[in-house]
Length: 240
Image 1 (cartoon, helix red, strand yellow):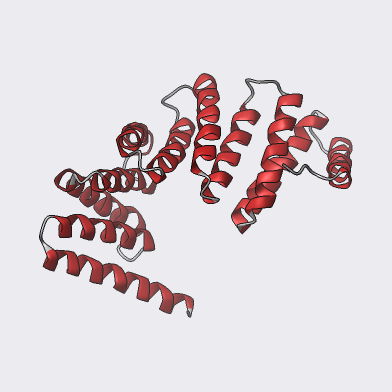
Image 2 (cartoon, rainbow, N blue to C red):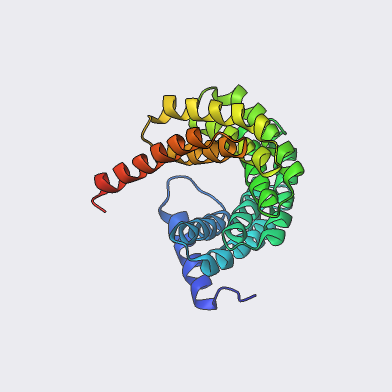
């Protein structure tokens, strides 16, 4: 694996020193350098520059280990970021390994029922689902749902957890069990996001697949048509 160039690391350190000199709150140089590395990893991830994002994430992991030690939140955040990068690169077994490492640390520092822990569990579930390990993905999504329902109530995050659980049940062929979960996700998304949000269309399509699998094609077609209308409306609004 390529490492950051000496010139780049020197620039980061120089910036860290500048912050230390000019900033109102004194912090350790390693903390500033780690923050810059993880910010760069997240920035490149958002841009879709996965190779650069991976490079910065791995450097952030190394810096977290040097500056903070093995049990610090900076390490679990760095591991979680690397896991996301690998997930979007479709390197699922590698992503799973890093996310499990991050989860172990986060559970120790925040506990298993903290919303930040649940978000990491959700990312792990996505990776497990992508590898068609549906039974485990279902368990993980159910764990996320319990935390989100308690922490957020009716909220887009809770609705997303319901949608993910419904999709996993559908992937296992448990269509009758998936339908009420997806209908609840749909109602919550319509309530919290509005009826024409693209996320609503996503759940409509998932629900259409479940309904069709139970032999109700006409109803499935209506759901699909509504999802398509939402997408068309979004394109018109954006001028596409």
